[in-house]
Image 1: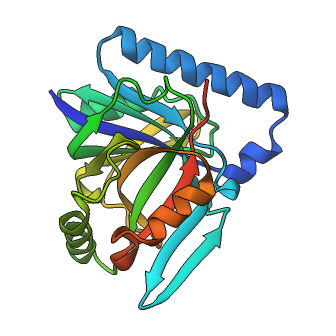
Image 2: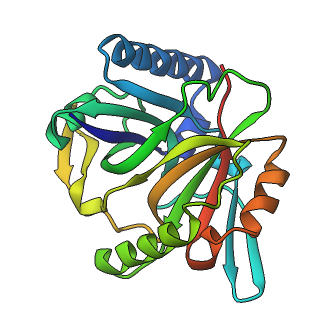
Length: 237
């Protein structure tokens, strides 16, 4: 069995237009979907991110630090939820993604993991759980992989031990699948998917007191020297 990340890329404009009851129902459906995966013994971790308008994106250019406020909607969509699963193949993982609770204009991105560590106690202690999406910007997938490799090499031992809650690095986009609604059904498409400016290469989680503390830590890290970090709090249930 291999490990995969099923990521819901949300059409945040469509989500904003939905009535509160419909969005509450969607959140319940996502919790139920995670429960089904857990009972099947294939779920390692899952979570839902707060809207990107509440997030920050941090990068450094020389001595200058660039901190931008959300929303961050690449091609009209932003990472909204994730499910870390085990499956025999990327095709089987994509079949799981077909069942992702989502609006018709949302999409699912299925990516194999290079490696990862999931902490079972991530949601059980006080404090905010902050998701840091590692982003790279490159003209080709080969160049993007080199950026991710460089970030990886310079940050493997950079996490604050007391705050670290696990994380993962993803395989290149060409190894994945995209799941999208076409007409009245969900369809699968092969990668690569480098159509957005910033492509996710990994996600890690830290327990911190506030988003401001997360931004301050990110600003001093090597993650932002070669790429960017998108920083978003997870919903707590």
